[in-house]
Each structure stands twice: as structure tokens, then as C-alpha cells.
Image 1 (cartoon, rainbow, N blue to C red):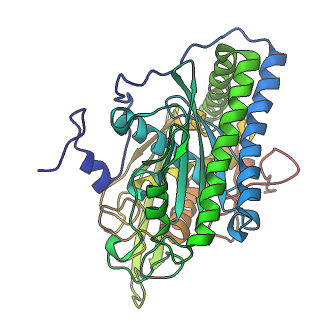
Image 2 (tube, rainbow, N blue to C red; image 1 turned 135 degrees about the vertical axis):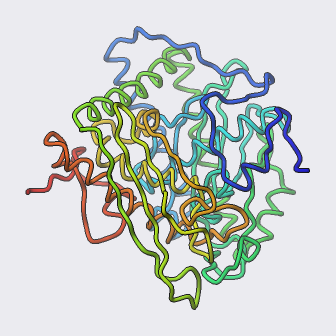
Length: 429
């Protein structure tokens, strides 16, 4: 019989099928969430704090980039910082790799549900995780997750995710296209407390780096990710001390609510309907020449978008993506196409997105399927499918058909975002 956590839930269901949080999180009473907020905030203070929070998130990313100095962080910018609410909703995500931030929400919510009692969540803690069945596109994308406390209550979270050079597996670099299952790949690590009350756990750091062919280089990234969350946490505490926790929390809530309202407004001018797309994967692993189908269905009903993957092949070989990857691919497309006027606030849109996937498929893999190519192959595959159906949906609306993004690359401009204006790409018809 599989072991159960303290709240009667079979934790191994998360490890097998992928973590899907419910509407209400089951958090141990040892952890009190800070939710006291001022609702009547003048517009000037709101704008000052909104930009202050975004700047903190940017400084978080720049700290990681500069402390690491690695080509992956400094030149490829294969990372993203995120600020999340006390319950895990994404408030601000950085302008780097977009699919790293919505996936951080799953990591935070899983920690709240499964670590709030044992080992507990305390001020100064930092958790490390790379488990694709909890929340990662593949194992080399490593999350460092830090709670922010105020007066003994959990106020918010800061998270960064960085692609690391090599964390084990049968192939150097930890992409394992010939893997038969996850045991040929780097070990998935569910959230562990790598820093405890401000003290680094040397034993766990050594255990983690021991898996790598490049422990010195990965060690630099490890230190940089801790530096990043520490800087962000310190800056948030400075803002709380200056403006007061209820005011800062009120601005965070309003940022999320404004993004939600903007998303709902767009949905109101899109007709209800269903749009479908199909694509093919050429080969499930090294030496395989077969074709495998991936399908997606998008239904818009009232103020909700429903994404499904019915008709997709069973998971096999090494090309699979977990539920968390499928989910975060959706926001990587929705953000630039539909949230350009509320950019970087994924939580607002996620309130109106439902996902109904079939476990055991190449876009919702069940353990122990091989998933280490998910961060390069699987995520791009799903982004292309999502891009297709979202573009079809927007094309059905006279008000939004000029907002769709298209292109020859399978990511269609949706993975990383940069530019001189905040508007979406307008395509002449």
C-alpha cells in the first residue's frame, strides 16, 4: 500500500500522474497565511508599488544572472524569476523564459500541501525541486522556492527557475533521448528544504552536486539561485516595512484582479466554440522513425477556456511531457496573445482556465515515463498546438483577430518576450 501524507491524500498519485491542485489547498495549521489587505489604495501608491514589485522581480533575475556568470544564465537567459501570493498565485513573472513561472505555482502549492507539517515552512527556508510530476518541464530546470514571512505569517513567495548544465542521467547535459524510462535520466527531486531557517544544508547540497558531471559549474548556479531568492526576499521585506503589509498585499491582490478583469473582458468578445489542432512527433526516442500524434481541443464557454488533449498517443520512449508542462505551455501562449495589457501576471488568466487531460499520454505522462527531453521537445510541441488553437479562437473574433501571433518556429514567439512596446504583434490581413 502506498504511504499517505498527513492529510489522507495518496501522495504517490502526485508522483505518478502529476500534481493537480484542487480549488482549496489542504495546508497544515502550523502555517498561517497572511491575507490582511487594504482595499482602498490611492492610484499613485498603487502604481508606485506595482512597479516596485516588478522591479524587485527584475533585480531577482539580474542577481541570478550576475552571480552565476554561466553562459546558460548570462547569455542564454534560460531562467525566470517569479513573485507569488501566499497561496501560490502568480503575481509577477519575469521577461525571460515564460513557461518557468506558471509552473512555479504548482511547486508552491505542493509545498503548502505536503511540507507545511513536516519538515515545516519557516522564515529563511529555501526549497529545491526539479520533479516534473510536481512542476517542471524536465529535470534540468531546477526551482529554488523561498517563503516570505511577516509577523509570523506567510506573506508571499519568491521563486526562480534555471536550466542547469548537468544533473546526471545517462547523457552529458541531462537530455536523454535514448532513455527507456525515468530511471535512465536524472532523478526527479520533489521539494526538499535545502536552506533551513537561513542555514544552508551542506549535506543536501553535496548530495545534489554529487549527481553532476560538472559540480563546480552547477555549484555556481546553485549559489546564484539562492542569492536571487535572498535578494528578492530582502527587497520585499523593505517594501513591507516602508508601506505596511496590508497596503502591499492590497496592491498584490489588485494586480491579480486587474489582470483577471482584462482577461474576462477579452473573453466576453470571443464567441463560444471549440477549436482543434493536431501535430506529429517524429520518433519517440533515438533510432525510432515512427510518427506519433498529439491533439488538443480548446473550448471557450462563457468566461472559461477549457483545454483537453483527447486523441493524443500514449506516453512512450523519451519524448514525453508531464501535466505541469502541458499547463505551463498554455500560459506561454495566452500571455502574449491575450494578456499583453496585463503582461507578466499569469494568475489572473489562470483563474479562468480549466485543463482536462488524459494521464498516460505524451502530453500528460505518467511515471515512470522518460521526460528529460520535455524542456526542449515536449514543451515546444505543446506550445505549437496551443498556439494553433488560440490563434484559431482569436481569429473568430473581429475584436481580437489582429492579436494572434504566428510564425515558422514552433514556439511562435511565445517562449520569451522582449521589445520596445507592450502591445501584441499586429498582423495585417
